Length: 391
Image (cartoon, rainbow, N blue to C red; front, side, top):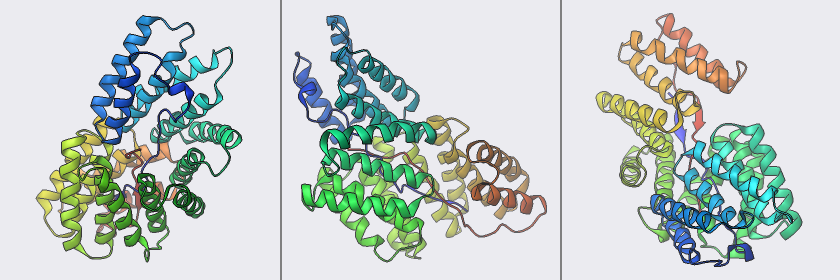
C-alpha cells in the first residue's frame, strides 16, 4: 500500500516588511491582527478580518486599487492554508492584476504575489505554471535583496519543494541545506522558519532512502514549532512525519501516540483539509499493518471523503487513498469492491502523471494482479501530499 508523507511544509508569506504594509488607514491594526492569527494557525479568524478589510477599503474607493493589493495577497495565502485553492488563486490573480495596472509597478509586491501564486498552483498540481511564477519571483527578490536575504531564502525553500514534487529530491536536498545554513546564520538556531526547512529536508532524505539523520531533523523541527503552540496545525504535520518515519522503522509503539495526537489537532483545527486526509490515510496504513481491519477501512474511507471534499475527485491524493483502500479490500477478499477503485486511480494517474510514470505503472500492475486473482504486492509507492502549513 502507499504511504503518504507530509514531506513538505509549504512556505507562503503574506506582506513582507516594507513601506507598502504601513497603516494606511484604520484597518492597519486589523492587518497586524491577521498576521498574528495566521501565526497561531487561526486561519478562519484571519480570513474573516481580511474580508472585512477588503470590504472597507473597497468602499473607501482607493484611487488605483493599490490599497487592496496587500489584503488580497494575504487572503490568497490564508485561503491556501485552508486548502481553498480555487478561491485562493482568484484572490492572488486579482492582486497581480492590480499590480500590473499601477503606473509605477511595485516589483516587491509583484514578487510576493508571484510567490503566493506559485504555491497555490503547486498545490493544484499545475507545476508548469507554478514553475514559471516561482522563477519570476526568485529573479525579482535576488535582484532587489540579494541571494542571502531571508525573504529570498523563503523563495528558495519553496523552490526546493516544487523540485521535490517533480521527483528531483537530490536537487531539493542541496537547495534545502543551503537554505538551512543561511537561515541559521541570519536568524539563529531556534527561529520558527527553521522548523519548515528541517522538516522538509528530513522528508527529502526519506524519499531518497537516507534515514540516518531523519529522526534528529524531525525532533529539532518539532521542538522549534511547539514553541508556537502545541496544537498548531504545523505541529500535526510534523507529528505525522515522525510517526511515518517510526512506522517504516518498525517502531509502532512510538508511532501510534504521534498519529493520535496529529489527528486530534487536525480534527479540531482543520476539518476537511488535505493534511487531515493524509494523516488519516497513514493511520489506516498503521492499523492495517496491525490487522485492525475494520478500523483501517473506516479511516481509509474517511480520508477519501475528506480529500475529495477538499480537492475534487481528480487529484493524486484522492487516487492514492483510493488505491490503498482497494488493496486493503483485496486483502480481505473483497476484490469486486476493489476493482473500480483501482480503475479510477489508474485514470487519475494517467491524466495527472502520464502513462509512463512509475506510479501509473505500479497501479496498472496492481490492477492486473487483481484481475488475475493474485495476492497484492507489498507496498512500494511513496507518494507525498503537498498541502501543508505555512509561516
